[in-house]
Image (spheres, rainbow, N blue to C red):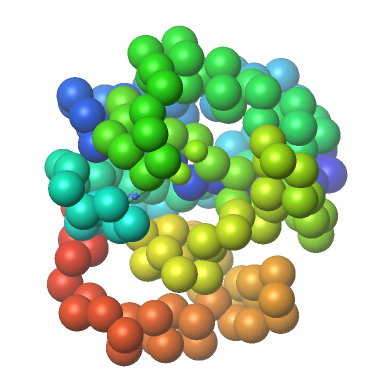
Amino acid sequence: MDKKVYIGLGSNMGNKSENIAKAIDFVACIEGVNIKKVSSLYLTAPWGRTDQDDFINQVIEIETDLSALNLLYCLQDIEIKLGRHRDGKWGPRIIDLDILIYGEETSLLEELQVPHPYLLERLFVLIPLAEINSEMELPDGSKIREVLSRERALTEGNDIIKL
Ligand code: PH2
Ligand code: MG
Ligand code: MG
C-alpha cells in the first residue's frame, strides 16, 4: 500500500449521511485499499450551483496500491451501486466520490484530473481535509492552514457546519 490518497464524499439527495456511510463501507471493501482516517461530517451550502439542497460532505484518507485510474473506476462503480445517474455539471447527486489528491501524482486526463481542479477553492473540502491532516502541504506547496484562512476570509464562513 504505497500511495496516500484523499477522497471527498458528498451527497445532497435522499438520506445523505446514510449514502455517505454506505459509500465508505464500499470503499473499505475495495481490494488494495485501506482507510486510514475519516473526517467528521459537514453540512455545507451548495457551491457552484446554488439552486439545490445542502450537501453533506466528508473526506477520507486511504492508502492504496491501485493506480489512480483503477481507483477512479472502483469509485464510479460505488456511485452506480448507490443509485447515481447522470446529473448535470455540479447538479444534485445521491453520492459523489472524488479523488482529491493521489500521492504526488498529477493527472490531466479528461476523465481524471488530480489534484482536483477546484481543491483550493472549496471550503467543503479544505475544512475536512485540514481536520484529518492539519500539517498538510497542498500540491502547489502551500500549507492547508494558510489556504484555509485565506479562503475563510473571502467567505461568510458560516455556511459549513460540523455535525
Ligand atoms: N459538489 C459539487 C457541486 N457543489 N457543493 C457542496 N457544498 N458540496 C459538494 O460536494 C458539491 C457542491 C459537484 O461535485
Ligand atoms: Mg464532485
Ligand atoms: Mg465527482
